Structure formats: C-alpha cells, structure tokens
Image 1 (cartoon, rainbow, N blue to C red):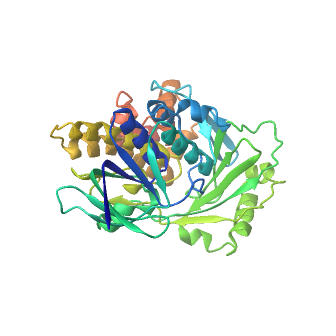
Image 2 (image 1 turned 135 degrees about the vertical axis):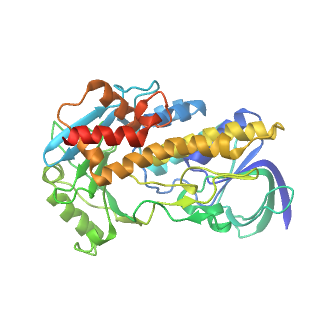
Image 3 (image 1 turned 90 degrees about the horizontal axis):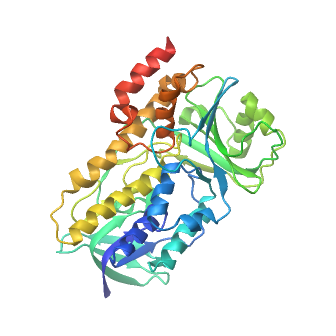
Length: 409
C-alpha cells in the first residue's frame, strides 16, 4: 500500500473543512482534504447566520459567496398563534457583520470548496476513510480512492470535518449520548408561489404549532422562488400523521393558520427527507493528534440554524491552535480549543433548551421588549454566541431564566 505524507489531513470538504483548509493554506501549511462524496451534494442546514460571514471573510471567500446569487438574509421572524415577531440582525448588540444568506447547501458547499481549491488547497473527492491509526508517532489514515484502491496518508494532525458522518467519533469510539431529548425532522423543498406582500423573503420564518409549543416549522426562502420547508418534533408526535412524509408535511402546513395561507398554492415536486436522533456529543473534542470540527463533534438542534456557525467557528479556533502546535509550541487543546468552543455551544444549548421548555418563547413573543435586551438576544440569534461582552452570553442560563420569569409575569 502506497504511503503519502502531508502536514494536515482534513476529513470532509463541507463548510468547516473548506474554511479550515483555506486558513491553513494561508499560513503556508500543507493540507489535503479527503471527501467521500462528489459536489454538489444535498445537505440540510440552509439558513446561515451573520457570524458565519466573519469566518468566510477570514478564509478569503467573501467575494465568492457574495457573487453566488444566494437569497439575502437580514434576520429571523417568529410566528406563534397569530403573533408575529421579527429580529433585524443589523440591530444587534455585538459588533460584526449583520447580514448573510439563505442557501441551497449543495451549491453553497461547492462554492466554498471550489474557492479553497482556487486558493491552492488539494481536495480529493470520492476518497473514503477506512481506518485510522493513532498509535504511531504520527496519525495515519487508510483511505480508499474512487477506484477502491487503498493508500495510507500520514499527517502530523487530522481535522475531522465530516459532519453527520462523524468519521473519527465512529472509528475511535468517541460518541456519547446527547443531553437533549431525541427529536425528528421531516422536510422537503417546495415551489412556494407566495404572493403575500407582507411575507419577508429576507428572513427565515419559524412558526410554532398551534397546539404543541415544542413542535415548530421552518420556512427558508431561496432566490429562485423555492423554499426549504420542514417540521421538527419528538418522534411520537409524527405517529399521528401519514407515513408518506409529503402528505404529512402538507397536513401539518394546513394546521398552522399563517402557513396555511402562505402555502395555499405551494407545489411539492421534490422527495422528502428525514433526520432523527440528530443531537450528538463526544467524549473528547481534541488531542495533540486530532480535533473534531462542527457536527463531527457536537450537533444541538436546527432551531436557531447554529450548525454551520459552530462548524466555521470550530475551524477558526482549531487552525489557530494547530498552527501554533506545528510551529513547535506546547499547546493544551482542552484550554485552547475545547473550552472556548464549548462556551458558544453552551450558549446555543441554553437557548435551544429554553425554546423547547417555552421560556425562550415567552421572551421572544413578549409584547414590549426592552430595546437593549432585544439587541443582546438578537446577537445570539445572529450567531455571536462567543461575545462575552454580551451579558446573555457571559451568563446565559441565569440571565435567560431571570428574563423569562419577568416576561412570563
């Protein structure tokens, strides 16, 4: 079996892999990206957060994304029992970019990967990881190429950006149960035919089921007259609906009054998708030989579109620590990578849990919010969950609990 050598091997060419590869390449570090699929390929997670754009800019990919024709996004809207609330991401507490895009992920991921290649990164498509060996002085991957031929790739470090594939957690037995209850999502892409002048295509619309506050809908408009449309709930909830997911999605759309009007003329020409038990965790995020990026390490819930943001932030943090290690510095991956990354993840987790408990919904739908506090909440919804100048990031659990109590009263 042939042996190849690189400084850094990256598993997966999705957003975290492409961003990490570009950032390493900027530093003159040799990197090879191994991607199991061919691009474009479908992936869920189509509504980005403005904080993503900071990572995209750092990776030198801002022009490529801005010029790709994606649907402009400036905020998020929430709908519950006839009450409509919107957040303008430019009116936020934290500094930084305040707008982003809603994207078909197949196209978006290819834009990032193509731009990484333009910058000089090597990406090998249809190359699948068969095994990993961490016992030697350097990590070594066994890889099968598009012809099924195996070769060994030795690297000084491995970044796992495999997303839901979770390659290293699976091969190294790192997976642990999530603290979040199991939930399920069913979804499809529709031709929406929305002609309501009050509908804002520049915002994701999150709607709450009228009878079940822990069941919610996403409606993500794209620039070509289509939308990603999905529903999230506990698995038992969907048992009362048709086995055919398109029929179930249609029925669920009719049960929420505002969506019933918006989607009255919608067409459902595409197959449905389903993901379940998607919340995940691991026993360790990094050692001196590997680090897990984004969903490969932890995935919370799709409700606030945090997945791509966490993926890109993890890429930035990991590259910073890794570049120091490769220069001979003795780094502690727990304090330098894992703990800073988990700060933002824990903030998102607090808000995810608050959403399903109803406490965050009480905050979001409060009729007379304090303008400054709304800006602080807006910053988190915009992805700036690492900004500890924001009191609702610095102490998320206590602050949200106190605020929810005030709003409920």
